[in-house]
Length: 199
Image (cartoon, rainbow, N blue to C red):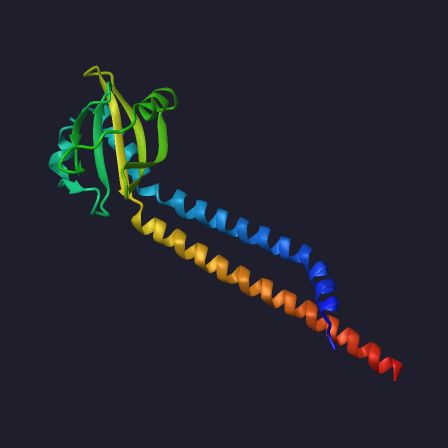
């Protein structure tokens, strides 16, 4: 018969495995979450860099509004583009929020001036989160420069992150229960064999 003392001993022996399982589960979630989040930038990176090539080749930023329709970024999942001048003032946009072109924190522009590109999660309003890529263009012919912001809602990405968290949590719980019961069964079998040996 397994006593409470036996269960306690089993628990102590099982703890290192429990810690290892927990750490591996956290690692799996973090790696998976980062992969999901980083792949959310791929389309924006392509559009942003292609736009820079077009603007530096002579295309007017105003054409952005003519090529694509305006969207409400609090509702739409479509990719949007905003073009700002060198001072951070919007000059063309397919994005609207509360009927206006949303503004980007000036610190992002400062970073892009130094590094050329930035990929961030942008929350212009509570409940509105977008994965944006910000790049800088410099047209030496027209002597104009500015920034291209290409973004997309994170709504579906965050749903996938939540699903991943649930799956990892379920896997963690099942593994913890299964391994502890295995340790307990091994303890019971060991105890039973000892009793058989004594007989």
